[in-house]
Length: 225
Image 1 (cartoon, helix red, strand yellow):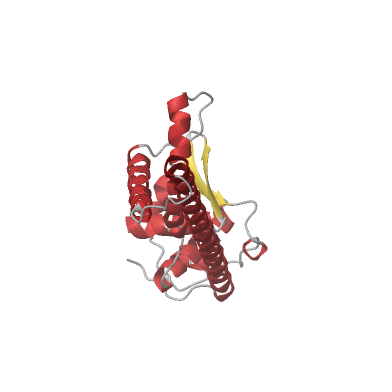
Image 2: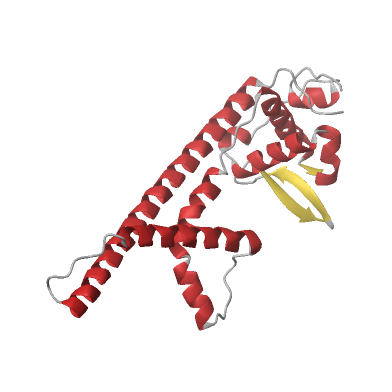
């Protein structure tokens, strides 16, 4: 029977909305701080490039030398090129786990792309923003209460609970990001279970009513699809 509550348990629904709002505030804060740091580093690099240009031209032409007007355009063109290279590198080499041994060329490459990668990480951070509509929240609450009763569910069985694959993935991702559920491998299978470190408001699930199956576990009146 699919999860399709039309009226979710009020306390859990409020707690879920509160957790999502807190998570999104953290995402926005981290994204904003990362953007500020990235802009500050680019500005510092710009000043360093201008200083080195002045130092070099002064050494060649004497104290009357001036920084070429086009140096700014060159810097920002180089910055845009590095951002493009960093994006392509991340696109085709998504595995960025550190390795024990790197060549000198790889180390130089990592240093050159450090700031562009920091800039691109703003988008990655903001992609963690989560929003569940009313139906998705109802399904999420029903799943939480189901897990409160069953303790764990096979990941392969969830299509029976939430048939729509994109909605199911979205709900599972959101509940994982707010640390309400975990995915575990046990008995050679993947299971969905409540996170032992989940917020206190999700540690006790309301007792289900009798004789209503999944709808009773979710504390809701279900619409059978």
